[in-house]
Image (cartoon, rainbow, N blue to C red; front, side, top):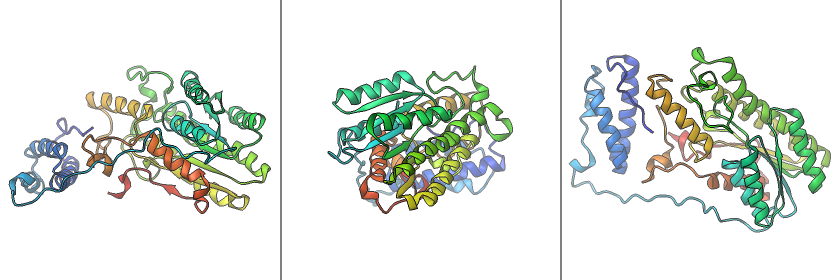
Length: 372
């Protein structure tokens, strides 16, 4: 998805700066990768830049394409093969119990499925009942142990109940993945209603509603706090250590145009991760977070929907689409996002004994998003 500058004033200094940024980045991509997508985007931006009066833009717009220099050899591009959805490490978590919030779909579901294949007994918590039961039934159908807890992590009693069920059914709690998260204030179990839920959708701060802010923070930050509180109480009382992974986002490492509540909430996850690592290392409990860029999940698909609808109406933040691809996504011939199985592989590594020396870390599982 690329930004549309056609409705913006080409003589505005802010717009000129945005166009200049995109020209530089896309020129680099087109020249270094010979990318058709990069060349097309560069061409579109050049057309808009012709109407701008900024002299710094014009030389970039006239830059030669790789085809203009036949003596320059082109290195063949190579796509990275994503993690196989069917790959797992047998018995890695044999006899261990893993609680996953947000287990119904996306990264939570993929991690639950692979963890069960690796021997874990899975307790899945989510407010999307139908999708959660589908995931848990798949795990059971493959011959593994799993149970579903329907509820919302914003409710303290639900978080406590999920841990209590892990203890009742499986004798304790060894690991946790706090995956429940939202990007807008609407119900993630319902289709996006752009017209009817405008007050719940992302807006820049001066336009944002209390409801949008409070709903996103409640799930993404307070929900992680309440989940961790229940999990850590049990792990401390057991006296046998443990490991927790929280799902953050690039929005917990950088800004993200047009979605202040999401950015603030994910920065909160970063803070909670580091604080918990500090407090619970003496108990043998490790706490880390993973922070991804665009990943092929229902939440990201929903985000693309409301950003697209907002842009079509001429609204939204002018910087919302300033950067849309990770380094690996931009370099891939199909411009693919990260997969849930790629994220799950890193999460399970961090929960495993192989990560015994890792805690308090905020891992950028973002395909290079934060490297440029």
